[in-house]
Image (cartoon, rainbow over all chains, first blue to last red; front, side, top):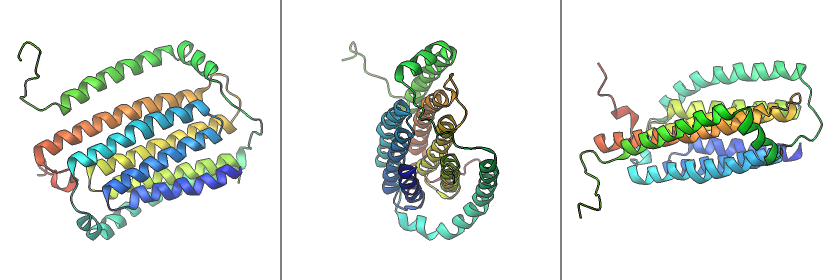
Length: 171
Length: 103
């Protein structure tokens, strides 16, 4: 319980920074921090393997990809962003606070019905792998197809249009 | 407050922050940042329910998170590729300037 009490405000602060910081690179780095703290949360909740995957995929790949995209696109100065912040913030809060209220209401209702399970539950990688490749084998194959399609699609999108790729016979 | 209720509250707040980022940010890449936050909030719920819910030998919670992470990575890759393509065309990632379909 105590690690949860420490981690929860840290995650929320980092997420708030990722949303609030006007400079895009700072926001992206704070997102990386949020994702890393999330991985630690999974480790604390004894989902070790998921924590490691979260660290490798999210912090190692997604966050770094976002930082690199920011470096490539060179976003404009943040003064403009700060100038129009009050108006967009009012709209944003008006839309998101009702959502938060509904979710917190549901959580408060839920608390009365459910009670915490005290047993230390953990999952071994062997157990996870066995379930993954027996019960969920079709889903693994579907994800494999999806990732292949995404790889080809992303390469197509990112390719410079009208530029012929150099083959060894050209040179 | 039980640990599960705390995790659910954390995930609600994180989801709201992500939604706020999606609604208020003007840079397309920072909108993606908000989407990542929302996806992570959902993952916290899965792990929380698995850890503190009734015993589940099929490991549905961790499995769902594994697949969710794989799909989120794919989404980020395609999203950023699209944003880079838009940037090549318009020299900007500002969503307010991408209004050529505006009537």
